[in-house]
Amino acid sequence: MNKLASRNNITCPFCGLVCDDLSTSLINEKLEVTANGCSLSKLAFAQLSSVNASDLRPRVSGKPVGDNELGHAIAEAAGLLRGSAQPLFSGLMTDVSGMRAITSLADRCGAILDHPNSAALTRNLSVLQNSGWITTTFSEVKNRADLIVLVGTDAVTRFPRFFERLVWNKDHLFSEELKREIVYLGDIKNTQPGVAPNGRQPLVIPCNQEKLGEIMGALRCIATGKHIEATEIAGVSIQVLEKLISKLSNARYGVIVWAVADLDFPHAELTIQSLCELVKYLNKTTRTCGLPLGGNDSDLTANQVTTWQIGFSLPVSLANGRPSYDPHHFTTTSLLAQGAVDTLLWVSSYQAQRTPPATKIPSIVLGCAGMQFENEPDVFIPVATPGLDHSGHIFRSDTVVALPLRQLRTNSLPAVAHVIGALQKLL
View 1 (cartoon, one colour):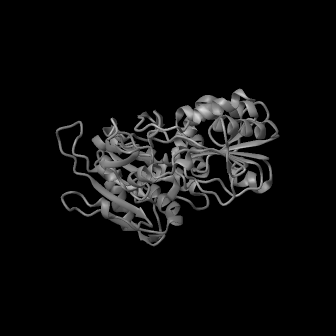
View 2: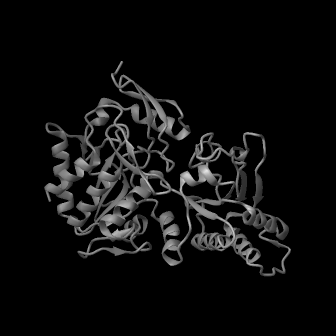
View 3: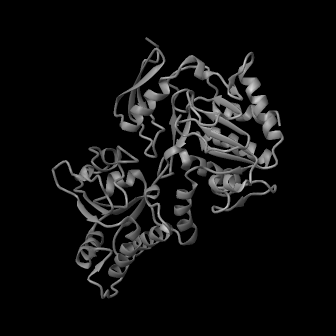
């Protein structure tokens, strides 16, 4: 048995909750979650442990390289970047150190930086940029919230332990037991986690996702005392919406939760903005906050690092020697479709399934061991997974803290930061 066989208080990097209470075991280099794991963490730990020795070798043009394997693959990748007029760095699924190295290399190469989740990030950021918002933290939700309204999401599909960690938690700061109420608003399929430990059922207000903007607008009208002639909005009666406003107005600490990835319809940012304006108004008489859920695929980590290193959020171009932010023209999908870039560097150190989009341009992939491709990249370098193969840091969904990731096993895989640093030295 490996000397690191059993570990407690392990941080999981596979969703934006970044739960830090897992227990794991390691036997013959295979990791298993033994306590406090969810469906996502158990699957990810198991899949990343099931790789063959041959999967650990870099490949150039689809063939494993020979002597000095890593150095040869890095040299080939450096040659591609050296000959590139406009490279695109995408994926960006790595930890803080990896992302810092990527931004430095992008500055050297004049690359465009984008994350596959940047369209969802932009929906939230556009609201924050245009009108601001009042949001809260995980700790505040755990310790204070007595009313939680989930808009357009069941939370648990993307964040399996949301209710366990933030809602039905047994430990909190105050001696008084919180009697929480849960409300679902939207096209919600899975409402079971909203059932309280005492059996109290959540309130479910079904409506089409794309009509949520109309619902939020009506809620704002009701909250501000404006008269509405209609008897229903988007299939929801005005009486039901009035009762919801009454609940929010009488709550001691209400929280409105949304997962921006679930609000994927035209002009969804206007729905989010209307929600945030409702939160602002409610704070005139009570305490209400928003909780935007995200952080899967380390998108928030990539965005946080880019913002403090470059001064702009994703996606951003460094092609002209200075940062240029454009969330509409600098997305991976549009750049590849328009032929606006000539080399792709893709980074995915958490999931072997997150492969790059199909492209005919030269490509370099820094990905999980065992990653399979429809179109083999010109250079593939298997890299370590933060929180399994090496230590690091990752931001959780509320972005107020970067949690530490611990090394749980040893192997020959290099960290993303190491590979990117070696690449930069050759350019």
